[in-house]
Length: 239
Image (tube, rainbow, N blue to C red):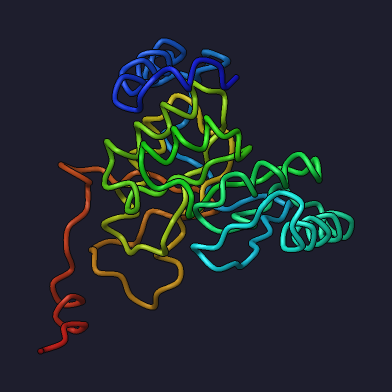
């Protein structure tokens, strides 16, 4: 699934990946795999499986076979033996793609790229290194809706599924995530964009657009949200 990546630059690969992803999709109101009408919403809460996050130094790297990777591999196997772990999120440092690939091969367990997957260049390098089974894509980290959509398109082109992640954003950015989620031709996992649920008060008007475990894009022009200026002013800090 990673063929022909070495010979292509990220710039040239972008158009090809987007084209292939769009060719696989159906009309905006249909599911890409079943051609059945799909609801204009996405599940916002993951299922019964657990995503294990393993904390490491962001810039650390470890050669294959090192004690750090052996320890990480043992921890992954131990956790997998105790719980139904869906994937292991960023078990080594952001730049340690060799270490991520080694852990995939050493343990046979799925690895998610999180901090390692922020830009289109990151996606290209992850795919070329065969470093992850899943990519966690953030609208905020990628640099906006278009940049995040390009990462999803690249993942589709190389056969790597992506999840839509969250930095616990409030209503404005969560609305952007909701619009991206329903526009994607394929989104195989429940998404993590439940940021507004963490706050006592949001900065947008309305009752919110997460209910019953579903995230629904708000209606209206643009992102479909309006600022609650009373909330904004109450949270304002004078410098």
